[in-house]
Amino acid sequence: MPGTEAPPRERLAAVRDTIAHTAKIAGGPAEAVTLIAISKTVPAEGIEPLLAAGQRVFGENRVQEAQGKWPALRTRHPDVVLHLVGQLQSNKAVEAVALFDAIHSVDRSSLVQALGKAMGASGKRPDCFVQVNIGEEEQKGGVAIAELPALLAEAREAGLPIVGLMAVPPADVEPAPYFALLAKLAKDHGLARLSMGMSGDYETAVLLGSTEVRVGTALFGARA
Image 1 (cartoon, rainbow, N blue to C red):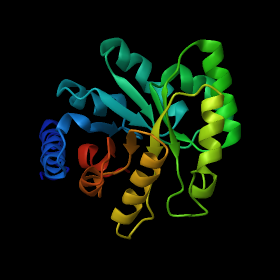
Image 2 (image 1 turned 90 degrees about the vertical axis):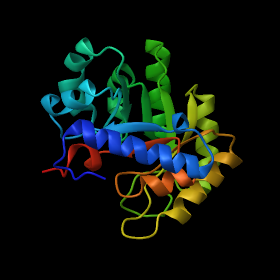
Image 3 (image 1 turned 30 degrees about the vertical axis):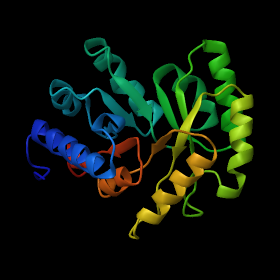
Image 4 (image 1 turned 180 degrees about the vertical axis):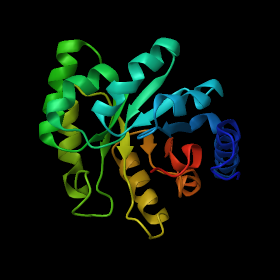
């Protein structure tokens, strides 16, 4: 794996190769795993090299930051697919639905209702992942495991296109058991997609069935 000082094209190729190799070990095709390049805090000029190298799926943490750089970038690259991977305030639901193609942080009733209303008004229906607080951490977003069935039912009733589950395991512990638990929850609820795995653990996530990996540092280098 090249260091983060390597050219963006090389870093992208290395991450893609790792995903393909790991997917093969797991018994699936590389195409079943979507690499989301997490471009939070990266200015537009820092994103352009990855666009030039052919990357088209990106993720942002904040609606406001994404609004500041992606409309112009998408004018030049209209085939970009944009994911919101950070926490979403209910009062930003309209803007999020307008800007993003997928939202990974659906985690509470108020947000479900706000998104349902925004989608109904705009006719735009981004894919939605329900975020699960897989490690039961107070400081993290995500619905409690025990409350997941009720939130899924409410989201479907509100017309949200729920496609999968998302989680961020606790830091500094082995992530595999948490990824395995999320995969089991998704299977139990008939959901095909799993948003799990970041720069430090995406190989483990792919081995355990991730369909969307959220990789930032390994592509863009350490953030300021």
